[in-house]
Length: 130
Image (cartoon, rainbow, N blue to C red; front, side):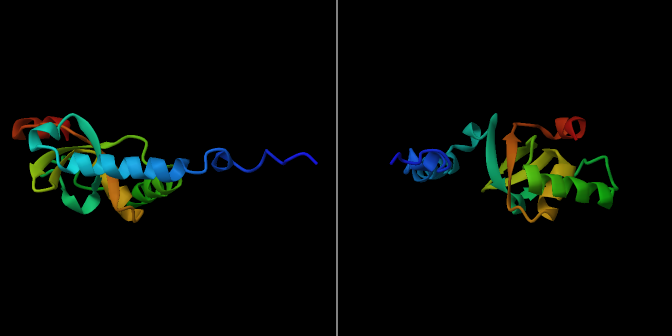
């Protein structure tokens, strides 16, 4: 009788693949948290949403709740396609540079971390990037 090969998924062929990938990812994240603040720029990190404060120069004052809910539902279903942009403030705190709607929708979706492109941005440029 022939062995059934199809329908078992890749895990049947590579049983330790998930655990190895998870371990490598956790080790990598651990290394990122040890980076010198000057090395925390021009990288994309997954950062906790509660560690991000809003951009004080945000020109948009009103956000359409219906549109935010649509975006939130999309993020829950498909994930976030484009990272937000933030700057590192120190002590694991960040300030949003751009992506206020994406950040709000991610919070609305109950997601606790978000991919963020970390840039070195001065106060004058914060207005332009917002």
